[in-house]
Amino acid sequence: MNPVDYASIADEVKTIQRALAEVRATAESDDGLVSAVVGGRGEVIRLDLDPRIYRTADSAALATTITATIHRAVARAQAEVFTLVRRYLPADATPATTDLDFDPFLTSLDRASQWGAR
View 1 (cartoon, rainbow, N blue to C red):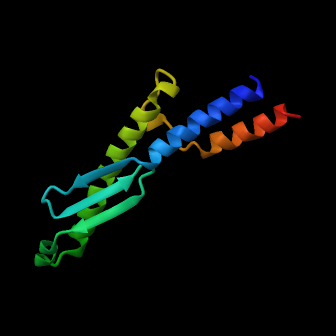
View 2 (view 1 turned 90 degrees about the vertical axis):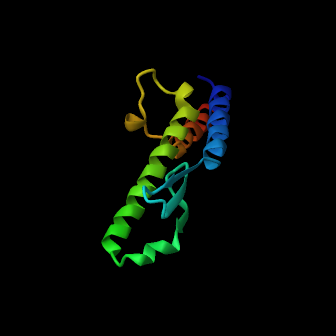
C-alpha cells in the first residue's frame, strides 16, 4: 500500500469520526423521571431529572435508575456507531466484539505514511 492509499484511508476514517461526533442517543427511565443523552463514545451530554424524583428519599434507587438509563442510552449510541462503521468491518464483526475507537488506527496510519514517504 503506498502513502496515497494511507492518506485516503485516513481521510475516510476522519470523515467517520466527524459523523461519530454527531451521534446522540437518548434513553428514558421506566418511570419517565430520568432522561439521559449520550454521545458516540458514551459520554453523558445531558441528564434530566424530573422534580418528582424528590418525592421518594431513596438515593440508592435513584442512583440505580440513573445508571441504568445512561447504560441504555450508551447501548443505543453504540448500535448507531456500529451501523455507521459497519461497511469497514469484517463480516463477522459484532458491536460487542468491535473496538470503535479510531484514534490508535489513525496514529498507525500516520506513522506508516511517514515511513513510506522517506
